Image (cartoon, rainbow, N blue to C red; front, side):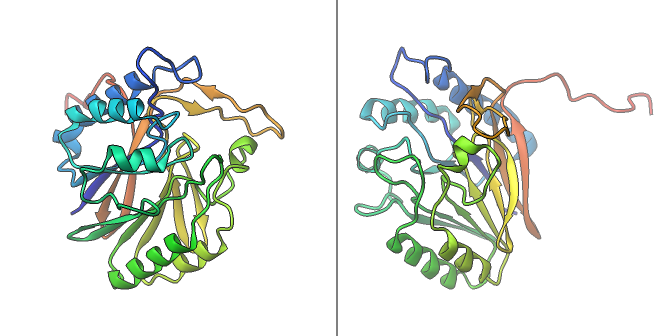
Length: 269
């Protein structure tokens, strides 16, 4: 049974800074890694960890080096895709030692396990907040899905193609996604689309597949569904997703942190 973890939107900033002047994102990522390590006896074994974009806030070498240093205690293999806060050329340079990192072009890759394939896609657009999949990326996806032969597959992008009701995020979603919907909907096997970007745990259909948005690890986009609501963050507990194969792809939300328990429901019986 394959189990993978998805973490999203670490937004690591330079040493001594707070994201948006409010959030210690390095502490958030460190707490996430600590939570994963502590939970491993109960939720593991874990085959790999995937980070669905916005590793950094400004896409600098210092931030990527800090991100990698913060990930070192994890002791699990991981892969990343870029988000709108990342710089793909700087990111490529800072992960050049990793065999999965393409030397040129979009940062797309696929990871194969016994009963699951994960396909990571680059939805970033240089100097823009919204997402888009290039023709090269869509062709990469089509070829990889065709080669999978119906094997359960998770396709991961940073930007979700669905509307969430949070206006300031929906204008930044994945644009021109009609072809993506057709490609995913035509796949004959079990398939899940997983994303980040919104910093909230949200699920909605996309064509005939499920789209699962992962929470951020340190802060959330404020849950404000009013029209023209301001673009705000809320210091809610971070979280991450555990995806596993149980005949179908099953996803669990796990909050970051250490909480009281476990307690037996009926200790005297």
